[in-house]
Image (cartoon, rainbow, N blue to C red):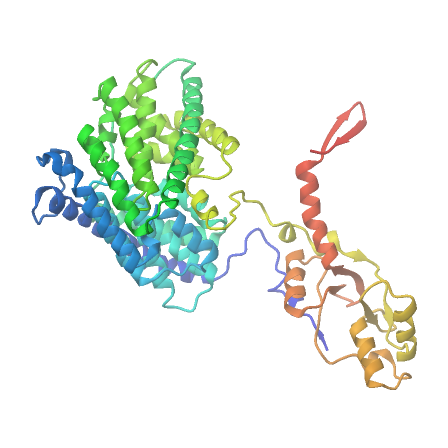
Length: 594
């Protein structure tokens, strides 16, 4: 019996995209996930406010306060340590997944954990982050909310019979929804999903993520507030050199991102060499937080007020330099100790401070150059250039500055990828023994059709051959492990292999029996010339048969065969296109490799 399921209309349906009706189901689920992401953002912000009031002012309140207004004096050294000890205990006896940035953990779950996050993570991550930030930790809420929103999406998905890829879609939808609710940046949240989290570009994932973000953005005015988070009225610089200045600042921001990432993991390596259990590392790191708070109280907490001040150009040169140096040191040491907190808000402050500092000597508003710094640092550190450019524009409401943001983001991205093998996010995953490639391209096996790779007019055996001749053929003439068997009209009868010949010899079958009559009743997979090569790759894996006959869809005659070796040609072809360089001058072609 010839199995041609791979050749049915559904299996070989060619098109630009692979979407089906399950996308509609995921889109409907994303509406609930988006609401959950918005709610989790509201809860996280309230928990941070509650922790801040408890730690710094000794009161039970959800009102937003600035911890720099405290009057605790030297007690500033103690409070971050108390919070860090609590977080360390939660990580040790609760879940180790609450440690760190949040985004690397989400990426690792997506790529290597079948997008399964636990209820424990969904509860402990926002609580631990609120304690860490509320006790003075110099972190932002974006990493924790991405992890928490992702956990909500993952938990919701686990209630249904979904594939790992579909769970990933809802996990990322929850993460993007949470980021939208916190920052009010729907476009940047969608692009962050594409550039950092999804590791694909498909309608199946794009449509649900967008719907979740839109639902979250609809809830935001009711839960958190309206308008851009850091609304600013910035005067754009004039003159033909302005874009060049943005490009130049981007180069410096790329260097800054590289130095910050290397310093972070150098400090983390230092903590790993300590003769103490990792549970106590955050407490040691909190000493730097307390000292930094004594030197410059504005470095404590998420520091969103600092971003407002940088955009408003209300800080003097000394204050900007202090923020750049002290905030950087405090954040690197605290994060390197393994406590719970995000990277985005500190990066915005550090990139904004560098941009504002350089802007003192450039035409235009220094606050404008601070915004350019925020776009560049996010691009260089997180390897998300489009997200970084749009995020800065959405945060401030300054969409007219988008060309300048793009210029800084691209140059920072270029320097970063040349100087750093991995981003500040993926380096942590690599240190756990994982490898991630963040360059997306079309799978060569899905791009090339069978006719592009198959061996045309393959050697075949006639179905009316006696077994005796088949055995002699495999003993003396056969060059392959298997051959298609055809009838007198050239139509496929089956596939005969060396294992079949061995079985006949061991069992002692009648050697005068015709080959067509001796083939197993097992189904034989086939494909058509216009089938995507990826379908044949799946057939080889599923069936264990290393050579798949290719038949004409109308006559069912054998027109080719596709083997494992042929499939490897697809990868080689892409590699040649990447590395082989040619020049055509005067009709003469010269070729050189890398």
